[in-house]
Amino acid sequence: MTEHGTIVVVPATPDRWEDLTAVFGTRGDPSWCWCQHFVTTGQGYAHATAANRAALHDEVATSVPPPGLLAYHDDVPAGWLQLGPRDRFPRVTGNRRYGAVVAGLDGESDNPWRVTCFVVRVGQRRKGVAAALLRAAVGFAREHGATSLEGHPVDVAALSGKAHAANLYHGVLTTFLAAGFEEVARTAPARPVVRLGLGGATGTVGA
Image (tube, one colour):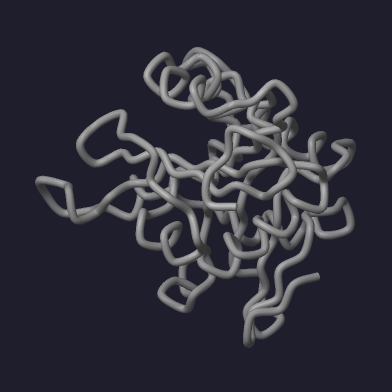
């Protein structure tokens, strides 16, 4: 358990499934995606709400370590963050632009982890939930043997138009920079790749 003021962050374990479903809600992208975008390939997941929910339930029930973190604000389920070893996410490892960036950063003994998704419940936004989740993710990844933690957030300042909440599930650059991550490259004008070295291996930055 990690506490950040009135926000408490814990691993998403099976006994917290109902709290996780409260965060995902019944409207918007989380309610049908159930964080299956990065653990799948193709577009079939976009038409499989029930299967997506079942898949995440199975991940929470069986994955060691748990596949994400759950935040509570004043004891109310408030947010979720998905993370794990990079090779757990085929949509990440199959991204050629992203792969070209990180290929030059990995050492032979590295165990790079990746933050993929944030979900902050309606009514709990602008309270520091995403920042608390990310800070907790750094410690969680380190505790489970990660040598680095990466993200592929959105640089809101570099967008040509308004930033819509539905497009910010990757996280935003300022949140990562505040947590100590360093930008290492960009795959698009508003899509930086950020990385935080967690010590104990070569090929990392920000240790």
